[in-house]
Length: 185
Image 1 (cartoon, one colour):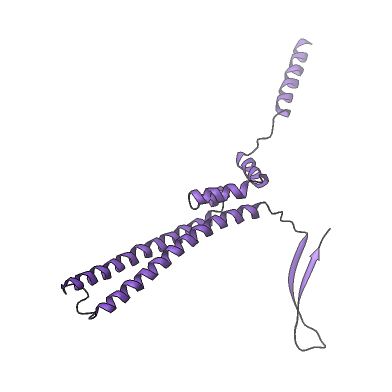
Image 2 (image 1 turned 180 degrees about the vertical axis):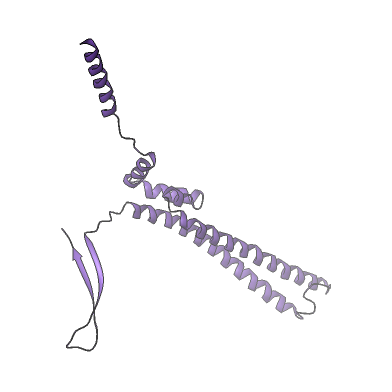
């Protein structure tokens, strides 16, 4: 009799242990839900992107935009350096010619000093334009992080659907084009 009670007691204890097991909650899912519900997510993402370009996109898990950001910043920085070097080359050749030394690298290509000044101004304008491109891409990076974080919080449900329609009628030879809008309550 005692053996039966002991086995029933053990069975009862072990069955309760297994029935009280909690579900494991994924930490990534909790972090994602916290980001989605936090009203400061857009401002945090914009701040992170302002500090380090692309960090706001990493914060909102929109990794695919980062190569475009760094690609644009790199190209504009490259053209800034290139146009600055060319402008300085024209400037040094002009200064040499004013001193009376005509042994620069443009001696056979450019005959007049006015053409050297035009070349220098040309490269200066494109250098300034590359600065504007750099600043524009940087600001677009911050704006993209902010808007992307706002769109994460946007409630997307399938209650509203819009479909294009292309229909043929027996009475008219031309097809009928339209838009079908459905809203489910």
